Length: 413
Picture: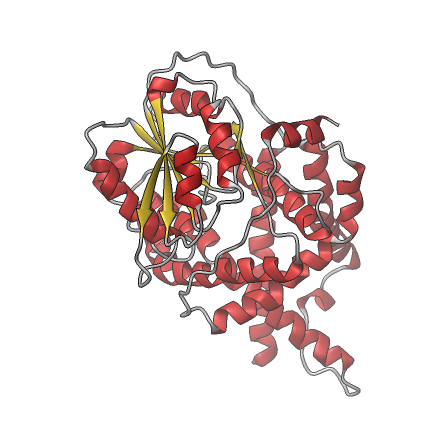
């Protein structure tokens, strides 16, 4: 009976893996279309910041040079529970610093919810709201792409998330490779299929009318995923704009990375508990494949947890000096099936680098260290499962000042 359960779980995980691999094939082709839409929409750009005096100035300078009519957008820096000079830096750069102090409700989700209420009370009404993190850099044509999508009737838009410091360490290289993979073989594939994309926490654009109707209401540790699921429940599909680039700073050390990913996984467990079954039942009742896909994605954190536990169980069984007790489904499959499955898993990441035209040979060399980063998700997710009720928001410190020109010159080289 135990072996039947173990094999059954392995079959479930294998089916999910095959499903995602099948979806990823639709990201191989990238369809580009030239869209020349005159600037029409007005934007409120919100920059979420907590003690970001070192980096927020570079982003503000970047945003003030966007290729979009200056009268059609305003910049607001949310200085959330700051104890440094973030507000002073924002004001010195000529933008509005919105200071929020609430030590009991900490975190980006609460800060955004507060800021939106402040925004709706202002005399000027904006067509859309764009959100960035203080450590970001933004392609100068970002608002033009958002404007075009809004004019086509899109309500929730996610920009292309890239890494601004992939060359800093093997950890940031792993982030960069993972993001290129996700952009191409997760996000683009779903856009090509007309499915919902998933918000990534920054580089997001929302129609103001929709935000007012729905309210923000996303205050978990992964407010982006939470809002994504709320949208899909309502039949609203966030869409990826592959040309609108946002560059995000990633932690350099493994310790900082583990702390950040632990927060993500803790929040993901919370979202999975809230949305998996409702979305699954809706998808069955409405015969809605998009909601089914969202349900599967919401539960992906449990797939990682289950994979870790099964792997640890089977390897422990093999290592112990006794007869094997537990069975693996792979012992019942032809060897070529196992080889093909492993090849499918391995080939995706280098393929993503080639498809994304990554030129740096160092990034290809870091494919050798990538497995360490990927495997580290397993214990992190396991620990997150047992600490998922911890909703304390942890801040990732950013201290390096990188300009957009620096990122673009490295990519060109």
